[in-house]
Structures are given as structure tokens and as C-alpha cells.
Image 1 (spheres, helix red, strand yellow):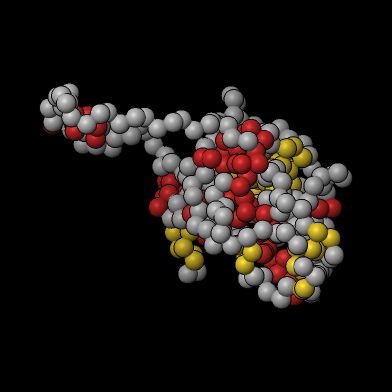
Image 2: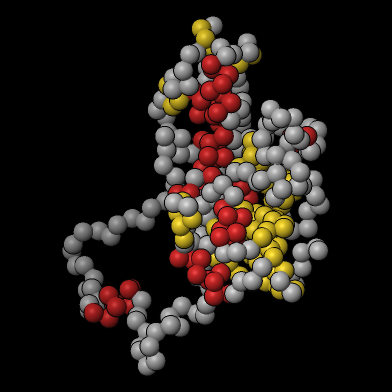
Length: 325
């Protein structure tokens, strides 16, 4: 059973989280209740207009406008600060490997500085000058790049698997830079997977505090009502694990099979499957269709597409500031 295609142009998705389903804002007020004016309108109505200053302080000069589209290199370094940072974080930003992989490389003695092996990933540095990996000098980090990948089922979102099962790197085409997945998709989950060259950007996207929404479409068997799905907006707890708000809508039903669209911002391990199973449904197919403003669209399975640098810079500037380590 193929997923039903939606009619009309695709929706634009921002970096905000789920919105409660329902009518226009304020539709739930009691009948006859007057809508409250906006805060600025109340302030203006309650206080008289200020008289122009006569011989007082000169008016404050407006701040100089910031450039709307900074150079990619400046945008990539924005927010990093100039202080010392952990070597694992610096190497991840430089695209050497994930932080976890870098910790293993340090334990194996493969990373050195000025010829001396580094023995802890907590080593603080202000730059990667003199740092080598397997004897090769580490280049300064290039501007972050972002790729969209239509992950097929049957492969793991990991660099290597001890059991020898296929991974996404077995399906990626040749000629790409070293890429790290942003978040994970289960082996049997398909759809949009974001890949980046920048470890700092990867971590920022994965943090729940950043609030980037992920949208899935699930084919599930069982009985469910739209009201049960709408109740997920208030979150729920399953086996001691708290799941945050989820926007869920029943798209289409055929007998006891239905397609359900779900948007969430936390992305806990197997969250969509566990929530639907908790509601008595059995998921037979799960597709991620969007991550933030980036959508799967009509990408063929296994295809890769790079996000334009201009669009990536604009998106990063819209992200919430996540806590820095």
C-alpha cells in the first residue's frame, strides 16, 4: 500500500514546534466575550502620547543594520566564541568524525598535538593548529554543508555495525565529503535524513532545546480516533518516559488501516512507534517527510541533494540558541 499523495503545493515549515490543531486563535472564548487588544494597543490606549522633547536629550541614533546574508565562513564561526573549547568539539566541527568516534580515536592514541599524543577528549584548545590525526594535519573547518538523503529501509543510521548489517554509508553515492547524520532513523524507517559536514551544527539540530520539528507519516493498523490523536498535544508518559507535545492528524482510513501524520520536536528513540503502539496501533510503515523546513518531496529513494549555502545560512540564523558546552 503506497502512501496517499497530498494535493496542492507543499507546506512551508519553519523552525517552530507543533501548533495545537483547531480553528483560529481565540475561537474557544465564551460567546460574547470581547477579544483582548494587543499589548501594544493597550499601552497606547492607556497612556497619552508623549510630547516632543524641547531642549532635552537628542534622539537616540538607530543601530546600524546587520548584513542579511553574511559570508559563509563568518556564519560558520558565529556563536563559537574565541575561548578554549574541547578538542573533541573542535575536531567534530572540522568534520573529522563524530564526538563519540573522536573519543575512541583519542583512546587509541591516533590524535596528537605538536607530536605528543592527546590522552583525553576534554583537552581545551583555542585552535587546531599543530593537531594531527593519524599523522595528518587537521585543516581549519570549512563552512558547514547540509545534504538531504532519502534513506531506504533495511540500512542502519551509523558509520559501522559490528554485526555487519548494511548502513547508510553503503547507500550513499561516491564523491561526497565526510558526512555525519543529524539524528537517526531506525533500520526499518525510511524517508528524509539530514547529513552535515559540521559536528557543531549536528549537535545543535539534535538538541530538544533547539525545537526543530520533525514530521512523520505512519501507516498503522488498529482503531484510533482523531480526538485520541489530538490528546497527544498535551504529551504523555510511557513506561516512565515522558514524551512532549505531538501534533497528530488522521489523514486517511481504509478499513482498520490508516495513515497518520505526526509532528514532534524531541525525537526520542523510536518515539513515533512507541506512542502509536501505546495507543493500540501496529505500525507497518514509517516515513519521515520533513525536518525543520527541509522536506522529502519527490526525492527518489537513495537520492542525495545538497542545500544551497544561502538557504542554510538563513536557516541557521533562525535557530534557537542552544546551550554551549
